[in-house]
Image (cartoon, rainbow, N blue to C red):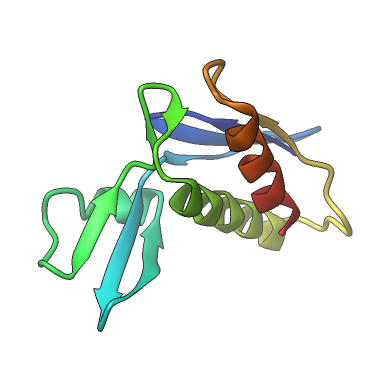
Length: 117
């Protein structure tokens, strides 16, 4: 499995099947009593951009080719891996993630950790 983290879209490629996921790099977050949690990711979250009530925010965790929010990016990666993993039979998928060229070692480590989670 290969993942291309893009500012606009995230792509997931599976060997022998090609691109199996192409969704916007957008995450909708709901805040309830000071606790934040992921409400939607990808296509569903994109429909919420600019149309959410005060306690829900739709964000793009990657901006200008770099990770703007580590935690949200991690949740987005986990969501996309789980979404593709449910459709395929992977015992332990090998994952390759393409990251922006301007990413720091800390950002690369955060991405690696999220893929392993």
